[in-house]
Length: 465
Image (cartoon, rainbow, N blue to C red; front, side, top):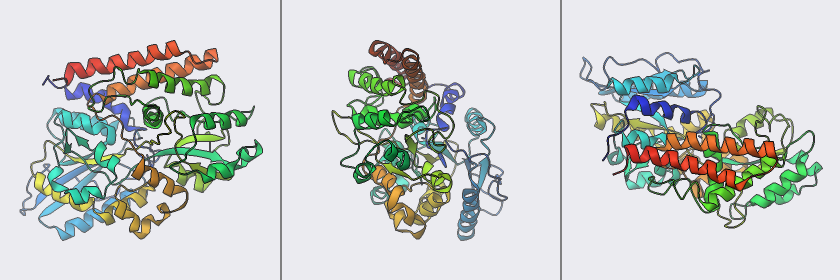
């Protein structure tokens, strides 16, 4: 095995993944992260991570980003509950404010290089492979048996697995689907009853989405919204289109991008997306909250947008399933969210594993997900009263996708390099299409070739056998 990338260098590129990767509260961007006040008692650090305290109890520490007030309160309540029931294993949490750039990730980077990581820390889903490959986190397979893992969505288990070992576990998930403004679509002559009747087995196709976008593009509206952001939002939200058309970004074993992201199928997918920009059906630089503000007719939006629209939209709207390629009709959807992992510096891994088993039980997963207004990872969580809103209506569509069509982003330690280069390539492709009002296949091929080469260089240098 080649020498692994030095943490302080590699983690610099990992930083960019945490924004949109897991979606907002999320994969996929969490607009509320860093704004919630830290709750007293939820972030007290034990003197030495994983050490035994003076009274003989094992002390474990957790790091995770600050989040909305409801989740901060959840942590205070749950840790008090655990600590009262387990006097021999006392757990504390440090909630790290992410409002000032990458404070959370920078803290992890510093701790990696100084061998001073907490016992447990949260990582974003697509970064699990990097941390695992570089031995920053340790396997936790022995703490979750097959029966327990079967209750988690397949995509959640997959994103947290590297080289056949479970390295992390998550309570929540994220997804993307197609939102549509019913009022405006009806004005434009679009049959919204047909859209409402679609099922996971019969979603809208790319050509049908393009037709709707064309009908709904006017001086005041664009027909659709396909750009979540020009960073991680691009691979997170758009990867299912590439997979649906026949090729993923990277090989299944995470070692090759050549012949994948720059394949004929991926060039066709990028060209379809670029044509939406070239024809003016979508904006290359959408205004903030473009769909909510009534500036676009449809939107590839995150599962977190439901709560925002329920609270603030002044028009009738709906959600349908992620569109599929006309040639394959294969249904695919995004996924990914923050996950808890045990660090290499933990000196009491058995106790950390026992705590994670409890933290990720059905009741805790349900109340955690409810506090964040996100889909839960465990099927049994939806039997809990707090998650009943996800068993029918709009929110249930995201759960249905996660349980049936979700595919995690490439599980490879070189993902951060790929993500940045792919986002750059697609931004260039979209910019060229907007400028020239056409999608140039040769230019698209060249940009995707560059992304593939960047991945290959990184993987070969640091991870190839």
